[in-house]
Length: 65
Image 1 (cartoon, one colour):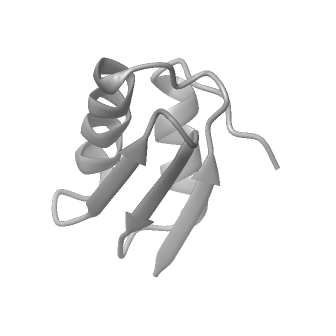
Image 2 (cartoon, helix red, strand yellow; image 1 turned 135 degrees about the vertical axis):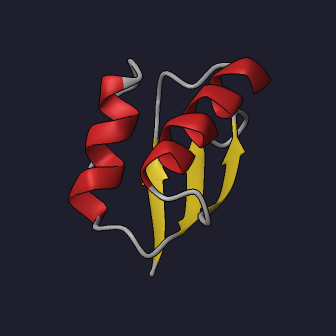
Image 3 (cartoon, rainbow, N blue to C red; image 1 turned 45 degrees about the horizontal axis):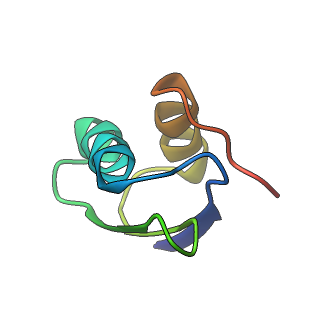
């Protein structure tokens, strides 16, 4: 499953790395492309979308609709 999420408070490469780490804690085989410039995170995962969203928000980031 491919997800594209907008994370407005992702500001730098450290933020994108933290988001990738949070997603990979749920699904170690996930591919995560996080771009601080566009504020979009593209995720290819087998995990449930709700679990991915929870992991990102638990890491301290917001996801806009």
